[in-house]
Image 1: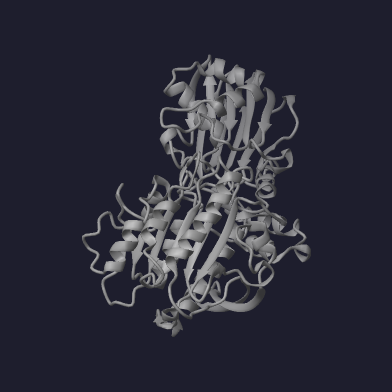
Image 2 (image 1 turned 135 degrees about the vertical axis):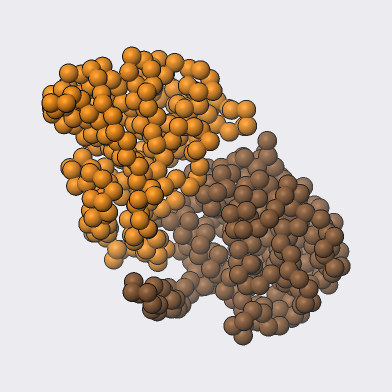
Length: 252
Length: 283
């Protein structure tokens, strides 16, 4: 199979680029022929500390095939936590930074795997939280996952924690499987832009293919427009948050 | 629309705490043998620590809040101790870096095997227990109005100041109601200041939290403080609901005779930067 992979991202308005706390992998745009391809996107929770580092560990862990399902993720998490702890120079920290560290970092996770074998093209998606997948074919959206409606987005998404075991993953870990055909496209998006896209295609009847194309062609301008556009309830069409979108196009 | 501004370093929030330090705060409170003043000092220090931790990112503090603490009893003045003594409203990063002292305390945590174990923690102290003299609440609210006025001029786009008054009784200097009316006329472009009241009465009457009418309030001071209290904006209603309170669109930021836990809950709701409150979600 042939995979084309590209991405766009920008930090919250008012933040420095260095304060961007989403993470994705791979970190370079690709056009590759392969039997298997993985990519992942994670949104570090902005109220937690060193969240971007935690998000980076999660996406690299998936792309490096350290886990494939909830059981193997459960098994891999303590090692990921150790890596996260080991990256921080605790000796130099003030009391508040040390104390915050004990609360851990939190992040969502969304991983996509495409493969091609004797039974054709398969895809699987693994999700914890509100980072979303949009799977489209012939300009039509076939799957939106794991959230499907703007009402499902909240300030309490499911998260993976770095500092302690925050309960069983079974309730939070959501997998979805399907078959791809040549020309299919997959978009992975963090919550703010995912919610905005769902609103545009469901409430505003915007054409998904055109919208996704525009997002990649005119990314910063589109983000600016959406952030400034008010919805009927007075909120912004695109809430002020880090914005990340990954695009995977697959062919035989 | 009011109360929609999200906290950011460009448009930070502002909390002003008014703390009754009158002689009657020497009375016992709660089950740990503490006085009201001691309990309140611990609660305030924990709250300031919580606010600091909310703003801690990596090795730094992001200035999402400004904070002022006014004590009223023998005097009406900033109640911050140590390096911040005498300062009015200060950025949360200054609070973080300038406690009066850091005490070593212990807390119980799970030992991972079904039991509990003691863990030593650093407990920063900015605020000490004080209890003497009368209750100059009117002057305290007037001072808060001055502080809030100065702050809104510098932060016209911010969420308006949130003032939390913690008292055990009647004002002894003047009627505080007109002062409270003036306080809630201080406004940013996002709405007028909010005044919430925590009433630690000495009367043994049933506790009340976030009432929507004064019908259940038997105490005249309770009626006064209720009348001074702002109606909860949506975000605080959501935070109160999350904490298990039954609230309506007319609920006011007032609590009467709660125990220690409910006092701490009220402080958390009043400063709700929880994720449930989208308006005060940190950005």
